Length: 83
Image 1 (cartoon, rainbow, N blue to C red):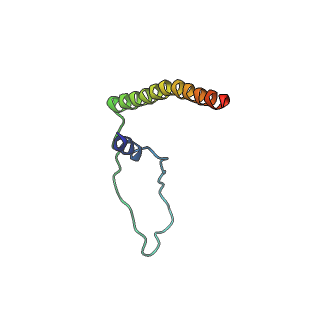
Image 2 (cartoon, rainbow, N blue to C red):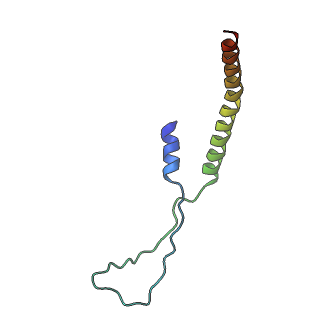
Image 3 (cartoon, rainbow, N blue to C red):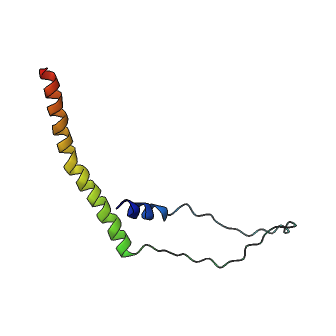
């Protein structure tokens, strides 16, 4: 399960860098980038559903574990309070 989350995190969207043209003359030895860019990896309905289901899974896991941990800590506190 952990490799799945690592894979999803590796493809997170970062802030875009705007490219602009310059009217200045090209410096000697400068590399010119001439590429047609296209957006790849658009978010599909399936990937959004997986993200939502993952969030619900984690919320449920935390929601079910917090009362158990709270009960455990109160019992440990009561045990040490008696001694």
